[in-house]
Each structure stands twice: as structure tokens, then as C-alpha cells.
Image 1 (cartoon, rainbow, N blue to C red):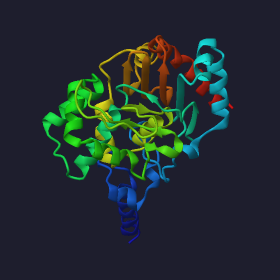
Image 2: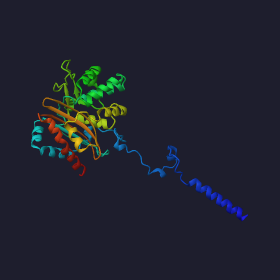
Image 3: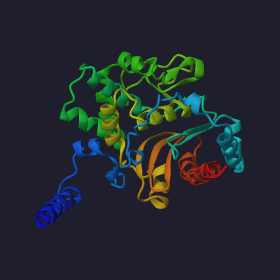
Image 4: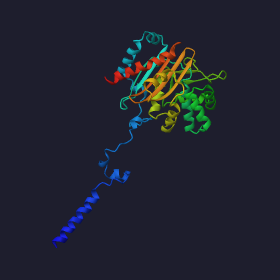
Length: 327
């Protein structure tokens, strides 16, 4: 009888041991995690803070709400330390704006002459891209291989023929309506104007200038920053549309201005970018996303040496952001 009792105890012991010993060959399922999540706390998960577009569990604030006075003071000090830049800023021939995205709980924006609208050459082609994605999302335009190719040529190589084809497909009224839409107000007279496309990138064709200064291809650094900021957060048109725009803007084919410097100092960073130049007007804009740097940088300059100035801006602006992060 005693032997039977011990046998039963041993049997129960081995059954219990088998039930509670982890099975290393079994795949982890959602059901397993739902029943008891504690054993899986150390499993490596994909860090969404490193992927664009970002997913934040909060309402996306307008750019005016993330303005940071300390960052702006540091930016002004750094820009004014260069006599040439200081003179251009004083004459409103130079505009700069930045957003520090390093802390996704505390984005910081700063700008100099950032509501001063200037001729921006090809940079406003980002407005054509936005209007195209809006039209595609609303089934006003079919997303064909030809259109996708033209959008990539327009952004990556700044191809004027592709840009003109897209303008003709969309029309000025559609582009303006998207830029003025209440969600983002990328063109708003109350804050100095902003992004505008009112002429084909060709010799002929009707003009549709913006109402404040009569510019055909215009921008303010604040509104361009806002474009990239909303893009980075997946808030342009839709998350899927934002992803598509990011893929089109990634890895620019032209390696001048900001990109020239960034390829040297941050070769592993992803760069999403659009620039422009015509005569003395030089502009550039970039969302920089990579190891040790996450930011948006925009510059508009009316000066014969604008291309070189834009190259030279990257390092001082990175220094400004690092100082701000240590405050």
C-alpha cells in the first residue's frame, strides 16, 4: 500500500514538472502573451521610434506649438557669429528653420526669418508631390507607373519636364486647394504665405502667382519645416500616403548643398530631401534620420554663394541642436 502511495506521488511530480518546464521549441503566439505576458518581457521588439513615419500616441501638434525659445536663441547666436550670414539675415536674404526630432516626446522648432516668403525655385515641387498624393488618395488620379516615375524624377533629380507633366495633370486649383486646406495651411497669408506652385517648370504656360508677393514658386522655411514634420509623423494625407512620399523623397540623386555635407559627416543617415536653385536663389530642405541625428533642416538664401552657404550650415546647426539637448 505504501509502495502504491509513493508511486502515485512520483507520477504526479513528473507530470507537474513536464507541464511547467518551458518548451524551447514552441513558437510564441499572441495567445501565449495574452494569457501570461510576464515571461516575454525580455523579448526584443521592433523599436518604432526608429522607423518613419513615427507613431506617437498623442495628437500631432502644429509647428507653432513646438517652438522652443532656447533652441531659437542658440540658433540666432550661431548664425550671427558668421558676419556674412548675419548680414544676409539682417537684409532678409537668408532664412533658416530647424526641428529637433531626437526626443519623440519633446520635438523642438526654431527659425530665423522663418515667416519671410522667398522665391524657392524647385523646392516647392514637394507641394506638387503632396497634391498628387491627395488626388490619388481621393481617387481623382490613378497611381500609374508613369505617374510614380514622374514623381520620383521630379523629387530625386528635380526633373522639370516630369514636374510640368504633374502640374498639367493636377491643375493649379487643385494644388492651391491642398496647400490652403485647413488641416495644415501650408499657404496662409496670416503667417507670411508659404508653399506655392503657380507656374509650370517650362518656358510657356499660364502663371498662377500667389497673392502676397506675386511669386510663382515660393516657400517659407517655417512651412517647409511643417511639411517635413507632418510627413515624419505620417500625418500628410494618410499614413500610407506619407510612407509613399517618404520612399519617393529618400536617397536624392543630386548631391549638392545639405546632401554634400551630410554624405561626408553622416554616411549612414537616411536623407529625405528637395532643393532648388535659380540665379541667386538657392534653397534646400531635408529630413535627416540616422545614427545620432534626427532632425529637419531648411534654408532659403538669396546670394550668389548660396549653394556653399547651405553646405556650410549643416555642422553649426548640428552643434546648436546638441547644445540644446544638453540644457
